[in-house]
Image 1 (cartoon, rainbow, N blue to C red):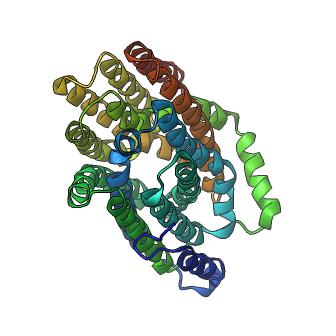
Image 2: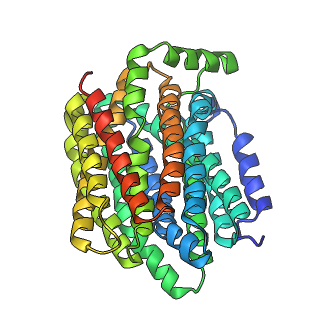
Length: 411
């Protein structure tokens, strides 16, 4: 397979080696005490990564379905493998991040994501696409705990605002990424240019990770024995495990709209508008939730889950027409994401002891990923049954959100 944007396997192997062989954190200058530099760098990384990610993902389903002619079930399998494996890997990877440090983990993540997008741009069958999905999943599993561990490790006074900026960067990229991807598609007859651009952006993000002066979240000191102890700590926290079950559908609820809208038959333009509106609304909701630790309050998560349920109930009767109802669904899903994301982060920080955020985050998102994987597979099969199957699939996703909202009543 030809490399895209110069990101061949040998080049990425060199990047990985330089990261793994990097000097220990103690040999690097310490991060600034306030954490301002760490927050600024992590926000820049998030914006860069998400621009590439959403430029591809907003148009990937249409590419797989129409350009490559794959069945909806196969599309669901590819999406499910990426999401499910990514979040399932978080179970061990979150604890590994505590061990080796967020800076190294993040740089390795970006190298893998760059390779994954390079493969995605040249794949033309189910086998190579699944290979690309696995590489993308591994990179994503490493990226999320690395970025959020860095934010969790800064001063408490800066942490909430830092996460709000981090989440806002994602939503800005969600607005800008799909139109940018659409422009690149118009400039080129194939999908390789969009995927290659995403690969280049992830490579830049990896360099930004390497420029961090030191890990804000220090690695655990007891090696792999301490790593196992961190996982045991999480599994012994009954209150957090209950919260993990309540939050299990959140990944499916956040991601599935990007699969459902194209499968319902909406045009690329309508889908792009939907995702842009969704992201703009989510970015507007983030500051309200981030300040004064509002995300720790149970009503915030509950309200977000109810908005997510309403999103999929609104989508269920649609058949590729009706831009008005689609925009209403986009607004509802934007509010849902704007409430759910900071609520999950802030409540995880509240539960996690110092130096254990990666372990707690890994368990939470690992469970959510397994749930998303199963949901994507089931929904894809139902879509293949025709309009009635699609309606029942979307009603079922909304039902998961309602059940989770009932469980989010307590602290």
